[in-house]
Image 1: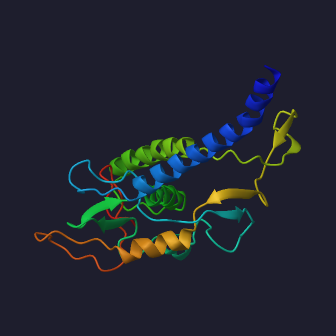
Image 2: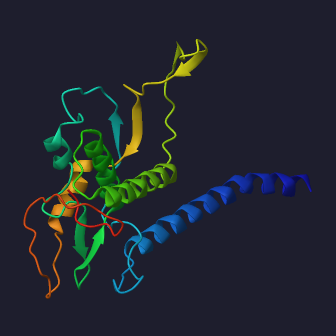
Amino acid sequence: MSQNSSASRATLPIALSALIVFACACILLFNRVSSNQTYSWVGDDFPHTLPVALPPKSHVMAPDEAHFGFHADDDWLAIFPKPWNGFLSLGPEKRTFAVSVYHQLHCLNLIRGALVGKIEQELDEFVGHAEHCFRYLKDTILCRADLTLEKTYWAEDRHGNTVPGAHGMFETHENCVDWELLKAFMEEHPVVLPANATTMRTGGGSGGHGHGHQHLG
C-alpha cells in the first residue's frame, strides 16, 4: 500500500499540471472564438464594445497648467477624432454608433463651457443637458472605478480639523488605453450618412449631445 500511495503522490503534481494546461488552453480557445465572433450588426446583434485591439499602457498623472484649462477651447476640441468626433460607422451596412468615452468627454467639455459662460443652448434645455451629463459621468466613473492607490498628505479643513488629502499628481495608472490609437481607429471609420440625410457635416461642429446624444463638439 505504501508503494501505491507513493505512486499516487508522485502522479498528483503531473495531473494538476495537465489540468492547468488544459484549463489555459480552454481559456485561450474561448477568447479566440469570442474575438472572431461574427455579427449581423442588425438590432442587438453587435459587439458590446468597440472591436479594436488596443494594447494597455501606463499613464503618469503630471501637472500641465499650459493645457486643458477652462478657456483652452482648442485643446479640448483636439481630443475628439475628426470629422465626426465621438461617432463612427461599423459593419457591412455602415451602422452608426457612439463610443462612450467620447460621450463622457463631451459631458466634461459641456460643464467646462458652462463655467466660462459658453452656453450654446436655451437655458432650460441646457439645465436638462447638464443634469444628464452629471448623472452620466457619475455612472460611467463608478462603472470603470479606478482602484489606483494615491499617496496622501495631512491638511486642515476650514474648521481646523486634521484631515487627509490627495492631489493625485505623479501617480501611475495602469491598464490605460492608448488614446492616439483609439482616435486613429475612429477616424478610419467615419460616419456614413443615410441616403436621405439633409446635411453633410465635414468638419468639427459645435453641436451637443442633448438627451439623444447628438454630434459632439
